Image (cartoon, rainbow, N blue to C red; front, side, top):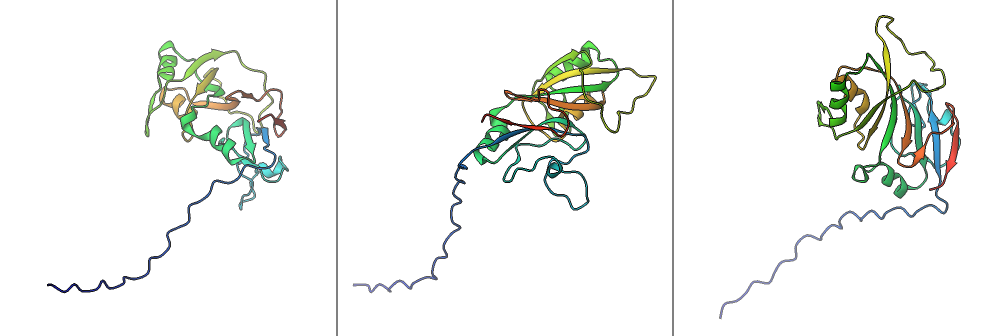
Length: 206
């Protein structure tokens, strides 16, 4: 009868990383609509002295639900609820975002169709968008003003997308030969900018 060697105890197992528990929802969820001014960073701190959200929103515990470029204006949502933030920003929800876009030049039918179809950018094709020409909207003056070229006309478009790549709308218009001069976000899902002036905010129902 063969004799079996007793198993030697191996090194003790190290405990694996603890599973991160989802943060409990806040006692009171808050959702804030801010009209982010031009040249303001979508963050609350900056070590270079640039304007940030802290200059306009003095509400502890809220943070941006998504981003808006420094050189863009308009609707920015802020919340203290991580689950709500994820619902607003997660691409799988395909939340529609509408922008009023001032472009250089007179868009042709072909250029508008290219935008609607979704032009291909350096990071791949974009999804189809809703695009229409609109009359120049009544907006607050931008500071500093937009730089125009006197010999080239400008036009306004309403563009609705359902994804959120970096500087996507600007890259889309540039890809079809219509550089963006000014960009104002006016809607995210069912939430609208409304009558808010630059730097103003209001509380929304979640």
